[in-house]
Structure formats: structure tokens, C-alpha cells
Image 1 (cartoon, rainbow, N blue to C red):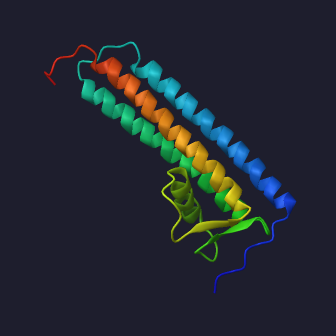
Image 2: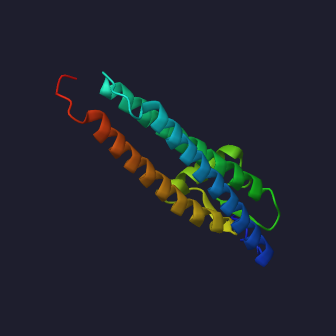
Image 3: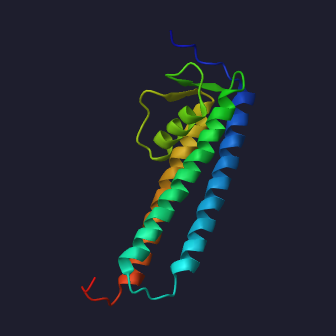
Length: 158
């Protein structure tokens, strides 16, 4: 039997919006600092092995996104523990792994399937979808700029 949607009053939605804003601010700072570190690490240098540098950048960006997804996942898990805030449909009690999985679906805007947010948790899912789209686009822009810089004027020797 699927549990009834919690009746999160205005306070529950306000708390969800506050948590979503704080986690989103944290994610933006993590992403900014990560890109800043990558720019310092690889910026302004000429690398003999351009592919190695690009692969390092791609894996670092993937790591940043996984960390950011985990931040939202911990927030989903924590908020699910509070009565009346919301629940994750598809599971009786959300585990930390379920929270991270739900977060990955929202962050990547893949969609919700077997686990989906309900009640005030939808506020965070909506905010995360927007933030995830922005972080992915930011990473893509950074990757493009670094690739253009690293591969500028190179021959096809590699």
C-alpha cells in the first residue's frame, strides 16, 4: 500500500525551500571552487599529452557532480526523517542510498521512476533539477573552453 501524501503545511514547504536553497548554495560553491582549482591546475600550461589533461578534467568534473548529487541526497534522506515534510514514493523508508538515487534522477533531469518525491520534498527536487542543469551546462562550457585552449594549434600527432 502506498502511503498517503503528507500534509506539509506552509511551514513544511518553507523548511523544504530553505534546505533546498542552502544545499543549492553549497553545490554552487563546490562547483565554483572545483572549476577554479581545475583552471589553476590546467590553465596557462602547455601539456604534451592533451588527451591526458582532458581526461583528468572530465573525471574531476564527474567527481564534482557525484559530490553535488550526494549533497542533495543527504538532504533528501534527512528531510524524509522529519514528520510531515514529505516522503519518497516507491520506498517505505528512504535510505541514504535511496536519497542519493533520487537526487541523481533530479540533478540529471532524467525523470522520476521507481522513487519519486512527494509533499514538500518536491520543492527540493524542482530546485535541484534547475541547479543540476546549470551545473552540467557550466561543466560543459568549462570543458569546451579548456579543450579549445589545450588543443589550440596542435597537430594530429596525438
